[in-house]
Length: 120
View (spheres, rainbow, N blue to C red):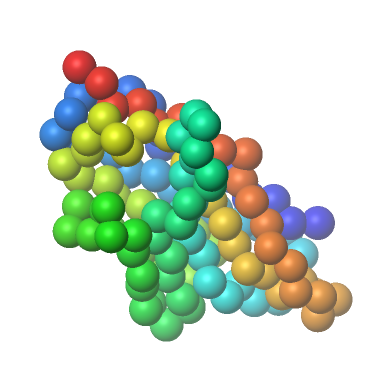
């Protein structure tokens, strides 16, 4: 069994900052790419940022220069530092992890989602 637990969402004013965290635990052999997706009402889920085990990262154009993704491989944890937040960033944010289990089976795992609301 693999568990993905997120934290750090909330309500923030435009221009503010939030930091999301996500920890993966359970029967893990290794974790490949970890990342964050978001889904706003009426929209499809979209990639926000992702990071490989060797710390190569990719970002959606809409968040470049404002968001930073990082990971601590020893803790199986990925972070998303969000600065200069805009109302358009309002969405449910989901953590994603590409995990190889101890049985050598590789699968995608998702967190339960955390709400980020940017509003004055």
